[in-house]
Length: 337
Image (cartoon, rainbow, N blue to C red):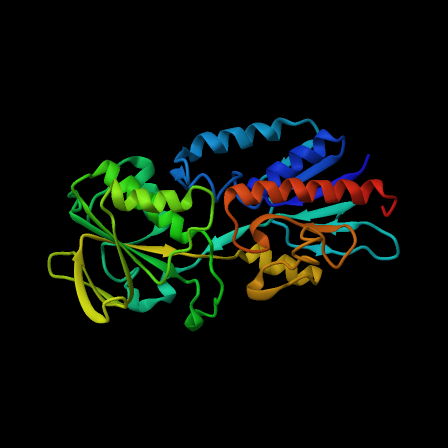
């Protein structure tokens, strides 16, 4: 029986592993955390239809019951070695006929943008921390009261030459709109502002969500750059910004300031891509060709899927995992291995 190693039990890893196992392959699914789906279970609701992230996670976890999958939790992959003299791929010293890298992403550390005050002043949160509040259905300011005014800032750690990330993280625009709507559902009287460079509402129903945010929820969008955020004597947050449409400076005091942090290659992705010789830009794994060979790499038997390659939505990640599973099957059945 052919053996396949899938590295990372996120959405891509679980989807691909279940498909490969259903075709009679023996699949070892490596996960460094104590539980799978680390980057999904920390969400509240998913755009564009506000699906409960916990229910989506449960449906994915059910796929782990497919016969042939061995889930190896608390098992980081520290060694990924190419075959020598017709041998097998070596993953932590074990031999496999093929390897699929699905090691995912991490979020940008907002402390690297010191001028935005995260970790320095109370009331400044990341979008992940806002997800936790929304999941609990309780949004409070620093003194435990209901906030009267909240501001979101786009592109924190993305499209930023100062931190070396020139790329768009693809998800921040729609996530801010989604979170802002969720805030207004919980606290209708709250004033909500979204500061942006430009809005990239590229997905199906995303533009409609943006329009709904304005027409139905009175969320205010400000095209502007925030140069500084600091604390006030009453534990609120003062924002200094430039309204680039009006061409004038502005100040705004809010109860909560939310930083929409972008996606970066995870440490596991960086390390394993470097070991395997497929390291691409910004630490992401490099596929052969984005058009016709997006799951294949420069090495026979090594494949990639999901956000270890670049920022992706959950929908795109799952579709990419299915494509990768097909490429693995084609390779194993082609006589190349």
